[in-house]
Image 1 (cartoon, rainbow, N blue to C red):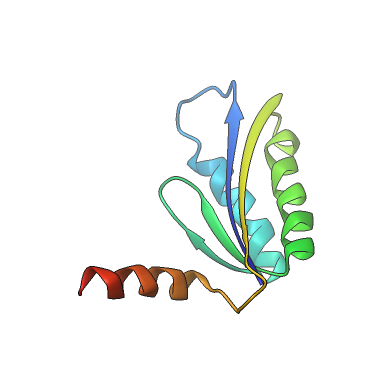
Image 2: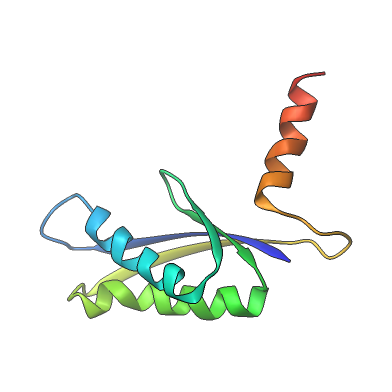
Amino acid sequence: MAIVEVSIVPLGTNTPSVSQYVAAVLEVLEENGLKYQLTSMGTIIEGDLDKILDVVRQMHEVPFQKGVKRVVTTIRIDDRRDKQASMEGKVRSVREKLNK
């Protein structure tokens, strides 16, 4: 299972706020049923890498569909294959080490 962090930034909008675009992009995630966590700087998605990459491509298109002429999408992939990884498990592992 992969954990992917994605940030999709529309450029050249009429306002510095991009929350309306973020909300529209998240609708794509909702429709595809992937597990995700919205953060203040991006979205973390958990699941099959091929499925995630397909959905990220759909997400990237949303601002264009809303009239934006330029979109910058940043993707970070954590694809661990020696054991099952999860968003919660990664956070828990770090917190356990903080408590020692």
